[in-house]
Amino acid sequence: MDQPESSVSHAAAQTGPTPRRLGARGLVDREELVRVIAQSLYSLGYRKAAAALEVESGVPLYPPEHDRLLLDVMSGRWDACAATIDSLAGISERNRAVAEFLVWRGHFLELLGTGDDGVRLATEVLWRRIAPLGINRKCVHWLARAMVSCEGAVAPEAVAEWRIGLFLDLVEALPPWFRVPSGRLEHLVETAVIQQVASCIYHNLPDEVTLFEDHNCHDEQIPSDCTQILCAHKNEVWFVKFSNDGNYLASSSSDCTAIIWKADGTVFN
Image (cartoon, rainbow, N blue to C red):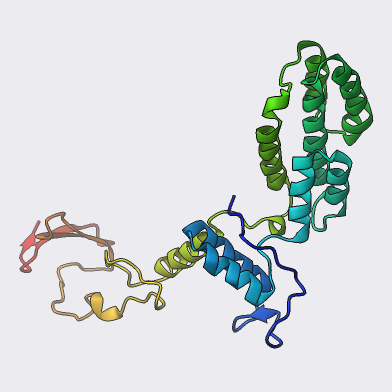
């Protein structure tokens, strides 16, 4: 994970009022942009710059709910985890149930790894916490079988690593604002560049596209001056195509003829 070096509050002091929406059309949310930039800086290794951006902007890379859930998962405070998930905005009921299932499944498998007493407690978790969520019954049946086979049980010495994996699985089920996806800024920039190239009707250059200006191929790069008129056809031309070596041109017309032209204008029947 691209973990920040410092934690800052949303209420951090700022030098002056800044607009919530940015861009000529107001389509860019300022806090979202700051978080995306900070995530990119961390991933590029510029940790001090990223931490300074968080402090100066007053916008943390991760929201308070992220840090709270991470701490609760690593501490095994399962009721607190469920409460945090229940408090999140912008999450569908289906995804909320999936996230809670992941939490209680983690608790269940850890209990199985603690011996006979753990199995009894795991049974209560299965029927009181997991079954009412209405998740795929196959998952519930697999957990029920695990109480006999101990399949998937988490050994005490593996709990820390297991909980890290559990948290990463939780992040995938939670809304995008909860954690900025890795490489998000690079993806947005690359998408914009691809769109500019795709919309350039004159694009035919192999040169790399720069980020310092909008991409635009000029029309002078495309031959547009009439140097010769071929008049052998008696009606409208439907199709023309050059040979691979560029020495010949084939044309077909609604007059039911096809003509092969040499590049110097010579006609071949």
